Structures are given as C-alpha cells and as structure tokens.
Length: 373
Image (tube, rainbow, N blue to C red; front, side, top):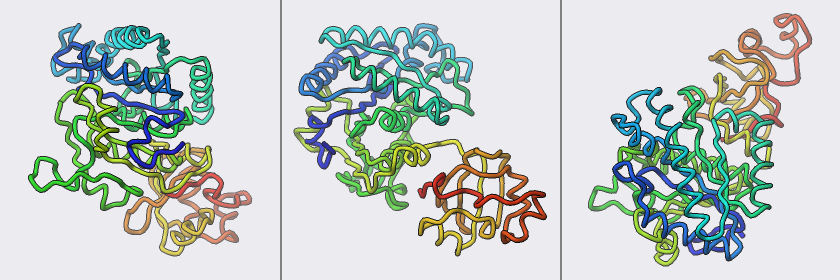
C-alpha cells in the first residue's frame, strides 16, 4: 500500500516515524504524557499490521540537562558528543519502557553518515532492519552523535529518516514537526497557505522553505525536510509532514487531513535510489550543454563534455555533476581520480590515451553508476 492521502497512514505496510527533540524533550525532561499518547498510536498501528521504525532525536537534549551543559549541549562538538553519550542511555530507556508497556520490544540502532554512504555497510544495516522487523521488534534509530564529527554527520534526523526508509524498505516516512507542514511562505505571515500535496520537489517548492527551527533544540528546519522528501521520492517513498505538538498527533492528522504529503515522482532501483540519496560528494564535474542533454537522455558521462573539475576524489568516489549555470544535474561514481579527469576533460577518446598513459575507460561515470537528481 502506497500513501496517496494522509488518511492512508494506517494502511502502510511499513512506516518510518521521525520525532524531533522539541517534541520529545521540554526543559531537559521528557514530555511523558505526550510520549505515552504517541506510543499508544504506534501500538495501534502495529496491531493493525503496520511495521514501525522510529527515528528519534533527543539524546543531546536529555544528556545536556543531566550534565548541566549550556545551550542544550550544542555549544561545541565536544559538548554535543558528551551529551549524546549520556542522553542516548536515557533515550533508549524511555522508548523501551513506553513501547514495552504495550508489549512491544524496542531495538536501538545508532548510525553515522558513513554507515549509509558505504554500500556494504548500508546493506548490512538493511539486513538488520529486516531481521528486527521480522522478529516483531521496533527499531529506534538515532544518529551516533557521540562519535560523529562535522564531516561525517547527517546533521539532522529528517534526512536520516529518509535514508532509513530506503534501507528498511518502508512505504512512507512521517515527519512529526512543530508546524502543520510546508507553507507557501513564512507561516508567520497572515496570508501564508498550507501546501497539502506536493508532486515532486522543484526549485519553486524549495523556495518556500525556511531554514529556521522555532524550538532552538533541533538541528533541522523546513529545508532539511524538503531534502528528505527528495531522497524519499527517488526511491518511490511517500513522505508527510504533520504537526506533532498535540497529543495523539497521528490520529489528529489523519482525521483532519492536515499536513503536507509529498508524493514520489519515480521509483529508482534499489542501487540507484541508494546512490541518489548519498549526501557527501567529494568532487564536482561541470559539463557543457550538449553533455547535460545527453545525460538527461540516459547517456554515460564522457570526458568530452566535461569543462571543469574540482575536489580531491579518487576512482570509485561520489562526485556531483553540474550544468554550466551551476545547477546540480546528477551524481555518480567516478571511474578516475580527480587529476586524471583534469587531464582528459574536454578530450575525445582518441586523445585520452596519450594524456593518461594507458587506454581510457568507457566513460568518466558509467550510466549504471549515475543517477539524475
């Protein structure tokens, strides 16, 4: 069952639900009544046959309160790591206790960006999700902030939730936020209008987003939620944003149909969806207009169309491809190191061997290892 309206939440075979810090924690303490109401809803969905995966923030906020750290533990990376180390224990206990009250078993999974960027580790995570769900457990996922650094972080749990949905084979992602959904302009303005359905993320849709998070606790905003929707839609996964500040927020959203539902425009194969969802390219290739059109038609990226190279990447690394105007077109796995691409950029195949010192490969990025964005 694929979601086509918010009322379809209860019919999803497998659902990822993301809960932000500001919903779960208030003044350093769990919002126990709110959490109990949410878990009742989750248990009800589980009883109806929907498998649940939770992506839960809150470790840093809980740990910072216990350690007495300023700014909710976000004054420095060291503070955030220390707070996460303490808070993750409290967060795991919180979910275990509340899910256990309904006969559900919580399972903790801590991930870093690298865990889902690397193909082998991604498949290992997918296998773990599959086995836990088969056994009837409820995986509770969080970014492993105690070891993650700025270079290897998702930075927000919205995009993590979308990547988890890919790995877990979910039909939909539900982001519980502190607003009703995406508005066509700043929701503080009197004439702001809630956008109820989005058929694909466009530049116009991205322009509606505000990067601000009203709570000060979380690390995401509407921009990160739209980026999560982009990741989800490439894998054929629907994503919804609803207001989670009320008790029993899922039932409220289903009954009122109030929220924003992002419908997927396409359903890439498993490997292409993983590739399109990767977040840390190590270089950029600029291509001419003819090459851009060829890529849109399904061609591989050839050296002749490359007009610029930046970054320090090696063969097999992820690179993004941009147009002459700087618009991101695609990303894929390079068949060459950066210096080699520099040497053959703009050259026909007949001229590449002399520059490389060996017979050139078929493409800089083969179409099997390239995904349009």
